[in-house]
Length: 271
Image (cartoon, rainbow, N blue to C red; front, top):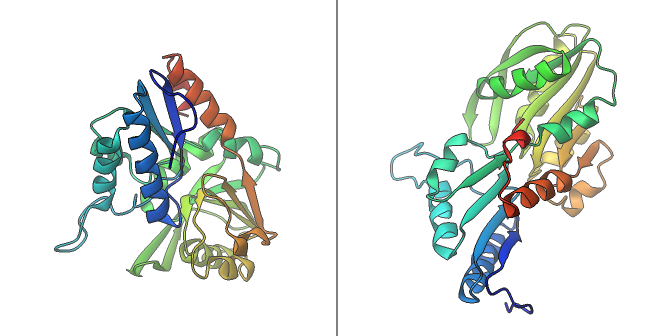
């Protein structure tokens, strides 16, 4: 690559989601940052709406890598002075960097859309125990009740729904998650919620990875609407799915970039 503008002494923001093809996008990001650093940019901020390898944030088996930490080291070494991301899979990823990290939440964008729908008789559902805090905070802003799916994961990208904690009978429910990958978890959760008497089932998530059989599963499921953001571009197979609603995080990111540039606080965006 080659930079066609003078960036000497500039405050540079490089926007790149490390989504599929993950390795290509990650390498491209590193090369761009290295080029900016060698062109004497004053400060380089890596704006990474979707942080790839985020789920490999700990050792889950002997001799397994912690790729999330490795990618953090690569980004720092390539020349990033700061990282701006949206809904990191785990908060501890911020500690993998030795530079400032701003982890924005897409909650305001999602809430703005959901508030255009009827809110009465609404229940926010966490698809696992790890997302309870997120679902509780989301439900509080909507004045909605909380339910939890207790599931057992049998293997990678596989899940078996076991129990529903909370009352969903005769209710409208929104399953809230940080990302939708193969959609196995949310589709199984939708089946359990339908069996428990839920009237209307929607899914809300920040990152729509939508890999493998995700689209087919969603099309054939009880899910009425899948609400995601554009942190990951929709691939060709997903673009034609009428159940998918894509919301833009451009306003959220641009406001964060403006505040970083002017050294203003961005804590008010962490809602």
